[in-house]
Length: 372
Image 1: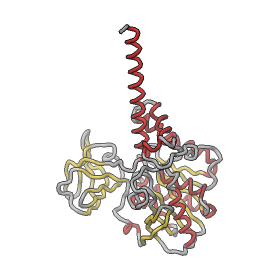
Image 2 (image 1 turned 90 degrees about the vertical axis):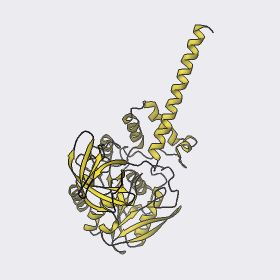
Image 3 (image 1 turned 90 degrees about the horizontal axis):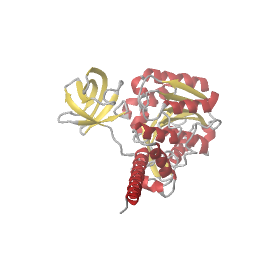
Image 4 (image 1 turned 45 degrees about the vertical axis):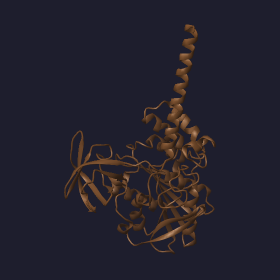
């Protein structure tokens, strides 16, 4: 075999291998973007009656209050009392169940164990297009103002409870909802998320439920992907005239930008991010990522000037590693005087309340007064 042919074959093989690697990275990135199944497991090194020591990670070393789950219960952890390069010791504020033998815990953004701690509530069912979607209702039927709290991807209703105290204080009746794909529903449970493009219909059913039970005005509180859902509901719902405003926390307002940021954060080539977009938006390729319906990234971009039409409060921190603050800046600029931005203290994705609950509640309370 001639040296020229050998060189050509070597170069061609390298190109094929590189293309295959980029394809694999694109598939991985697309699956991560749309998967419900990613968990935060933190290693436990020691514990006693008042403290718990974790292996040091960005999560375990993060300031604020959090709930960690283990097989026999959960613990609410607070202040960091000691730390070094490999371990972090935090106070245990409250605990349910025994930590005996526990070596790992699931770290969550929630701050409370159950909806009981948020006040009197009832378990209701919203009839979504694909089936029943359980919800918690705080407050009575017949109230003229309701708030609907929408969790994000890889979360559940417990995560969205954090915005209930301030709306209860304002006299709103609240619904904390579930939707297709999450752990609380049987509809499409565990399937890849459609980034809001199908899930919005289940939250739309909750808006119609609220209107049917007395709501004249509805505020939508969207956390992360829940923000995409809220934005779509405000645009598409047959009951959209009742939607008086949006409160968006760590909002996913441009999914193209979020996926590109995810690729860069993982030090993947830009082509992997572009392929991730293609895989999620192409009807055939999106099935490799587990989607039943391809994502339309144009419909999932609210950084386009003039698109937003109702009053909106955005709560976001520059410390968010998942949704870059730069995207929120574009969203705010595009929304003009319809958007109010509250820049929260340094916090990772959707943890603004965990770090500063008083500031979080005050920002929402003040904004609600301006749109009353």
